[in-house]
Each structure stands twice: as structure tokens, then as C-alpha cells.
Length: 159
Figure 1 (cartoon, rainbow, N blue to C red):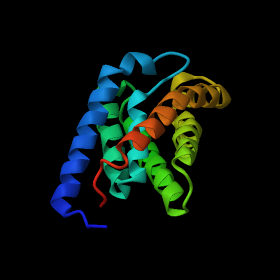
Figure 2 (cartoon, rainbow, N blue to C red; figure 1 turned 90 degrees about the horizontal axis):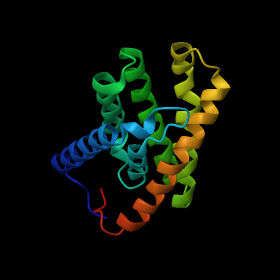
Figure 3 (cartoon, rainbow, N blue to C red; figure 1 turned 120 degrees about the vertical axis):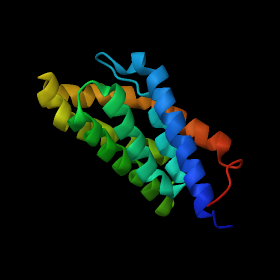
Figure 4 (cartoon, rainbow, N blue to C red; figure 1 turned 90 degrees about the vertical axis):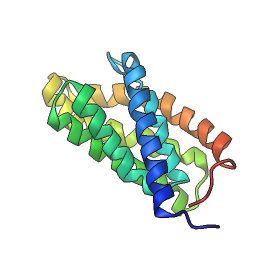
């Protein structure tokens, strides 16, 4: 296994951040309403291959939330934390030697448990309602992420 140089890590991080923000912007119509499908969240699963993506994905979430989110700084910071913790959860799945399919657990569970902590008071909706809604919406990007990972895993260089 070769070691990825810092410049290459920075390049990969920048590309992933740009793609994440673009996907979030282009697919934002799917992340509104009762069931929020955040297609770009499938990128969390790339942390299975590139463990260094936790901070870049958190930062991408922060930037999207800040510029396009609509709920202000608390929403941007909240999604940044969710992005980092979810990416680290995906990385943990790899470190303990589980199959790629187990990455759906952090991608579904972490955002659905954490995001309602700040969204519930902002939207004046019960925590449980938001948890169920976000969980259902995260199923699509979680499964898409695994399919993406399975297709790209042999093509992506190790780090």
C-alpha cells in the first residue's frame, strides 16, 4: 500500500468538497419537505477508502449550510459536526473490519439522531418526527454510497 502525499490528499479533499457542495445545490429540491433525501450524503461512504475525508466533508456541509441552508450559523455548524461524526463512523466500520454494507448504519443513524437536536426547536416539530423523517431520507444516499464504493473501490488509489 503506497502512502498518499499531502498535496494529493488536499487535492482529493478539495474535489470531494466541491462535488459534495455541487450535488447538494443541484439536488436541494429533494432535501426539502417531510422526507429529506440528501443525495450528496452518499459521499460520506468515501471515508471508508479515504479516512482523511472527515474534516473536508464536515467543512463542505458547513459551507453548504452557511450559503444555501437557510437556517443560519447554527444549522451550518450542526451539519458540519454531523458530517465529521458520520464520516468517522464510516471509517470505524472499516477499522473494525466490517463489510462495506455496514456503512449504511452511520450514514442513516448519525444524521437522523443528531440533526433533530437543532432542527426540532427551529422548525417547531417533535424530535421523533424529524428523526423518522431524516432516517427514511437517508436510506437512499446510504445505499447509493455503498453501490458507489463497490464500483470505485478498485479504481481509487489507496492512501
